[in-house]
Image (cartoon, rainbow, N blue to C red):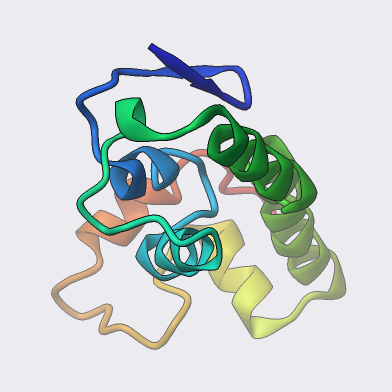
Length: 119
């Protein structure tokens, strides 16, 4: 087992998939980090040297991921609601925000945005 930022990863898992487990790190960011440290796409977590693991944890600790990023997203939505923008009202009502149709296909957006329906 390899620890990266306090998260335990099995040794047989690919490095790219394990990096994508962190909120805010997608396929492009993980491949950019791996290319920065010359790690191959098919490399597994167990094959990493200690220096590479320390480098990965250092880079991930500098980035805004997990709770910090979640808090920033919630603050942005809260700011939109407080200023009374169109997007903020759509968030508050639980409707699609980015221009999707509401005539037929808004059931998923309503289900996902159901938590806070207050303006």
